[in-house]
Length: 313
Image 1: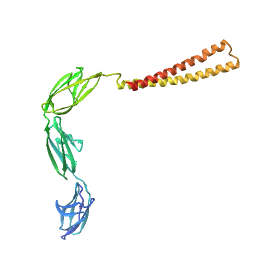
Image 2: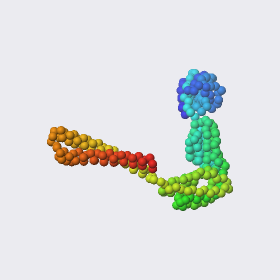
Image 3: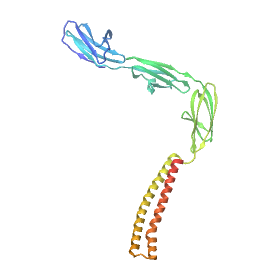
Image 4: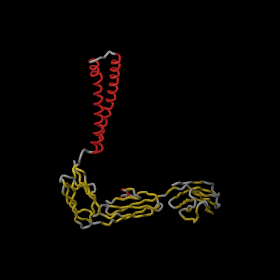
């Protein structure tokens, strides 16, 4: 609360107070009494003494504390957004609560402060019809909202999964393996899921009503190929190796060119003739050439294998 105090010298004469606020058109209250005036306006004929000026417009409010004597005063009241408190008493007690789309778990155990104005309350629980309630929270209001959810009843659900070792989950919570009877199954919509290492998880969305008996059969497929994490590592490693072999191919290409140029120069100079030229070529040029072609072949293979692993698996 913003408190603005003015102190003046004592006198027995009445005085006027000009009241303004940071929001025009705000209602003026004098000691909690509605004066019928709105800002900016003048409260007249105030006898000497202490007064609380409160201005309010919608959810905005502000206060000022005055000591009035014999001189007219003017006061500017700073306004701020007001608030109230909300507490929700749900039935069942484990219901979840949202206010304006945001979860508010503590609002069921204590009063929580919210800005005044219009809001939407949602209360939901497994096996119950959710309730959506619009409400308006007044300035400084302490609002308590009781909410009794309508039960959807319960039924019996039997789940069969192949293979039998699979774990069965209902709404993310494990309820058994292979074959399980959930009795009672809270009415409403549920997600039934089966999980097993080496198999593709499978799930089914079911709706069960009060008194229903429902059978759910899930058939799992074996996982084909490698897991995504493994394929990513293997594919990336193959591509990385291809970069290494490509670099080696470039080095061998340069070495082949140097050796071949030397071979040509010697032939032209007449220092290599007959079998001597053939021996030099096989000893100096051909090894680099073979390694270059081998590296090119390896690079091509590694590139193909890397992309195949990443794309096909």
